[in-house]
Image (cartoon, rainbow, N blue to C red; front, side, top):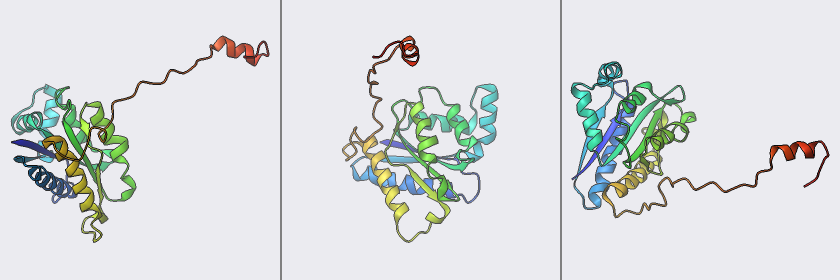
Length: 214
């Protein structure tokens, strides 16, 4: 049994963030099953956990439903994480949840990143905020992230649905195996920097003064 945990950080009810989370959770479930694996999808809503998260920051200990949510994330084979965009980045509630996890909780865990906002102008939040955060946490971020502006919901061109299916397939391939996503598609390990020829600073000063020429 493969466990997928969907973390949704929407604050309103109903929430476009939860709507996107449900679309992604359903797509991942279908894609994992299509690869012949059993799958269980659990949704962690962060809104009801806001007070418990603040308490955890002060006490260092999770309680009640927050402890259960953290345990779900630890035991998950893959994560879908969805946040609304606040001030051009992920929300504070979203960041706080991942701040209180154990340092190695996401090591090597496949993660699909997604975000919602009122306008498409915030679409780069996936690349400048979410992807670096989960790379720092040593997660394996799938190549395709999913951003949805308000206008994308109910669109007739099917663009959002296509991106959801593509991202879900990439996560399912990492969780269940046998997919088309190769390790070459996943964030590559940093390559060693090329050794550059460095000119000593003293030599640069001499050349600037006309003392010598290389």
